[in-house]
Length: 536
Image (cartoon, rainbow, N blue to C red; front, top):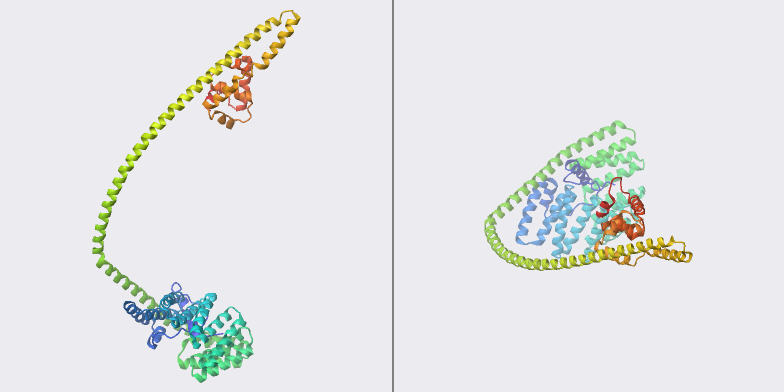
């Protein structure tokens, strides 16, 4: 399929020349609609930089006069200019500007045509889903207004898009719908175009006999309408079909016919396409000299076209750059004219605002400082009161703990003396007396370490040293109750003698208990047990 070879070749040239600016894809949906006037149409294709200057000037005048419809048309034609240069991203950008204007002005006929243009641009960059959405939206608008020509065009474009996604049943359906409308309107040019599209579908499937049939019908229609450009393209397509079916003489006949017409019209793009097809056909016929000859001819034309389009597109880029510089200079000049007045007004306003702000800040800062001072004083008084209360409570608890400890020591000392006396009596030979005294000693031994004062001691100790036992358990969590009591007594700096009395054991036994405690706490050799406990 080789629809619209001219645009295809320009797409290829645009890609090779300015990849950063132009994004060309050699697939084809149809030509843009005519610009504002025939002169601009010619300029767009031959001297795009001159056309751009004229359209830019007209756009500026339309915006100044608030002629919104003309503004939208100018945006649309600038988009068409970029479209012909294969700069589809820029074309889409301007088409969308036109779309916005047409929607604001409720210009539905212009909006529908512009939607088809947007769809064509997306079609060229292979964004078929978006292209289909735009074509379908345009179709709805044409159906609402009863524009049969627009309906038929949209049907054809939708069918071509489905063909590209290989949805051939849908593609054929919409081409048949378009054909029916063109027949009803007796639009021979439209009928020929749809015949060509149907032939393309059959060529893709491939049903080459049917493709040849519809290409022939399309050619007959274009001959009657004297559309030479379309004739060359269709003749090339027929040559392709013959080549694909192995009928090389017929393929050469049609392709050479296209070559002759392209030379007569001085259409270098179509001539290059014909040379390329001739080279392919001769190559399949194993006539390699002829294939090479036409391949070289095609390459020479390609270089020639490349140079011409190179100059055109570089001129367009230069024009865009100069216009941008000019617009920037004008904007800067206009801005500078009003800068002094704006700066003066702004300076006065800023000074007034700063004065008001300063007064407000000073006033609020003073109020804030005053409030903070009062709050700090209240907090200080409250803090001092709380500290005094805590200090008094701790002193009281410390006294209670000391008294409890002393009482326990005295009780145990008393019990110890009593036990010593009883033990002396036991040494007597009186049998009954000895038995009773032994029972009494046994009871004293059972109760000497279970004095009720230990509970009070533990409660008051924890109140004074609130986190001590938590730190102790974090260091070692397998201590017994006696170990914890020993640690608490060491924390109170009691002497070994007093601790032995409280535990009801000898000092030797106490030393053994301290040694076992060191082992459980994993204290290194040389570290003092009492010093370690005081740091907890």
